[in-house]
Length: 299
Image (tube, rainbow, N blue to C red):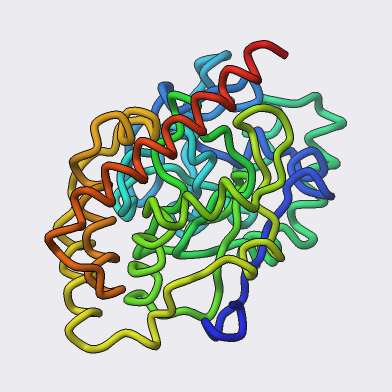
């Protein structure tokens, strides 16, 4: 599928000479405290001032100015993300060194650690950040039955740094990225995931790159002009906030049903049978996820 899509799937893994190596707690900036799930997430966006972002250490309460031209957009986690298009969200990563970085590092780490991290950041951190940017983000490891799991893929007009456990895709147009974002959030694709993913524990699963390529996939390049236009219009008009995946399947309506109906149209499925098909696939997927969730709870 990678060659057919004329693109490159890639993953940026912070744990391999990544976060711990560069002092990531002093580089990642959350948009709000509600998005901060772990103690390692320290910095939160406070506001803006004179071409800089005001960031606050949520533990020491000290505030710092970070120049906007040193920042890149970031996706820290797909958990809790409920919109397909996150172009206007406000998580950031400090993408290159700037005057004042040492003071920020010393507020979070010991003087010795801060000195080591700053040396490493100045050496090659900017290159690593630029390598980890993608406009489309796809889950690499996720708990499909978790309350915070709403979407498996998101899109941003501005490239995002993949701090999350995710896949990015390079070499793809914005239009094709939007169409694939819809496809990866369809029930047809979810059914494939549940049949081929690597199960780790209950409803937790890892979506290996090779398995993705083995799955049936809608190829944007093969779409007719009218089909492309229909799907792109759907993407632009889907401003809904998606509830949890389980709640989407329980409802059987809303944005998920609209996405499913669009792809059934593309596949030539008869319109008068679509509602029945969507009802059946939603029920089947829901039963599967609930069974996996129950298995995990028993463990």
